[in-house]
Image (cartoon, rainbow, N blue to C red; front, side, top):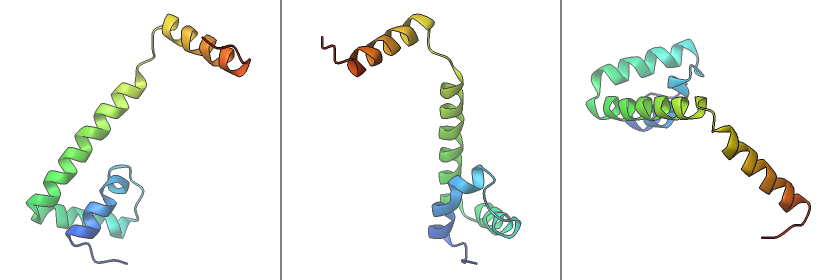
Length: 82
């Protein structure tokens, strides 16, 4: 298992936020974040960014926009140019 210094912590912060690490790795990163302001700041930025992306992806586009996009895709597939 890697030693979770700043480089390793920053490399794995995304997986940490998405619970994709082992229990031991989570414990190591949590301990590092508690004692390192730089990595904690990076974690905070990544956490905010993930929340914004999650909210943005949860919103459905207006139906007329979705229809226009799908119509254009069909036109492109059928070789119709504008």
